[in-house]
Length: 306
Length: 253
Image 1 (cartoon, rainbow over the protein chains, first blue to last red):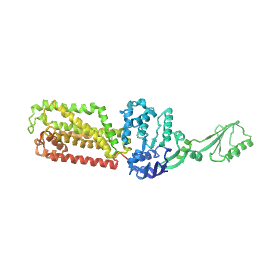
Image 2: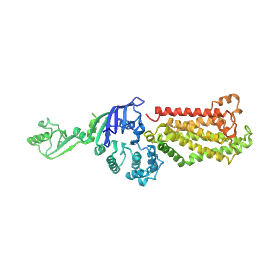
Image 3: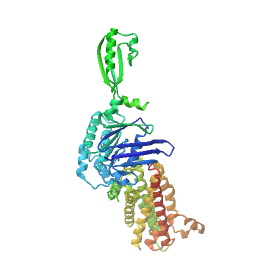
Image 4: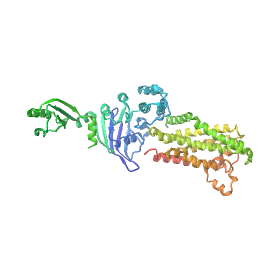
């Protein structure tokens, strides 16, 4: 199946000589939620802006829904909805007019029933006649999403959609994104909240210094790059690490009451059994043990700092 | 062609005018009426005729042109500058609209506002000064042509400006002096010969002269030259806009 977004050898050098993107190659499948992660200034927004037509590419080819974004820009853009990072709204307009304007701008005839549905889905219906300037930050964010959905796009870009949004609204948005995906909308998400990507994404892409350094199925990424950790709370304080344990990736906590054993989540767990046997042989008793897997955030931090 | 897109931009801009009637319509009408009262009724009655036209009536085309130029520039420059300032320009840039359609929407709305304003000012002038329109078709054509041309010019200023001060510089520092020195209050035939020649480098002379011809059948320069010069400026503005969208100047990095 042809990808909904296809990026080939895309580079961007700004007028001041700064290279924001370096030979990006990326395919995003139809109907998936793709999370694009990267530190500030990595090139996430530049990549999105090029695909959406806001920034000109220097070299390379981009297709949206099979249409070249330069040669077939009309058809390509008709398929795309964008929720930008900044809260850029027409402050003096009403919610209804602003959302209707967006639909017309994207070449769609008026369809009040659709606008009504979008506003109701985003809990904006009661505010439809309010000027945008009178809304809270969270509500403005919803208006931005409503504008992006007004023309029924096949592909939706969410650039930091939940920045500055409270937890409840964030959960609502996650729910809305899931519903959109169920309806076949492809969603590309950038976020600083890694838990958001962990919660929602099907695949993860990591961009660093203008280069895509990893694209992976989320579950596989967690398995491949994730670490497991076994923590043992000791009955007696250890003053120093016993020599027999030096061969294992074990650390002793500063207070001497905890041993921390880190291992790959893919690795067979013989190491744990061996560690516990060694402790028994040494007469080191423990009163509790717990294991945990590393989060996507830890994997991400590890990747971008390599 | 994305007709819905053009209509969306056009309606959005017209809605802005309705929201700001005081600033968009009432304010220029009142200030122009003050000219009619002072120069037309009060001082004008003590001034001699020019080209056999009462002074109060003689200055009407120039004063309408002053408002028309200022408002066309102001409407169009503000129309495109505000989305740049507020950041909502991202939506226009990412929409399936060509630059021609963007210009039709913004400039069309700005020119419409100016034409409406021009007609309101002309209607209001009747309360203060008696005047006739000899060639109504040409008067209206000049009104539309000038509004479109200077709305295009205003659109360029709106793209160029990176602050509110720059939005005001061209209308206040360049256009206003050109209108005042372009024969609004006098015929350039009344000037010494050297100043007559210098005046011919002022593009506004041709606009006012042509517009006055439509009213009274008299002009400083031939009507064909007036129309020709306006079309030259129109073409120059269109070329400027074509270049802006081709290069993405101050729009797309």
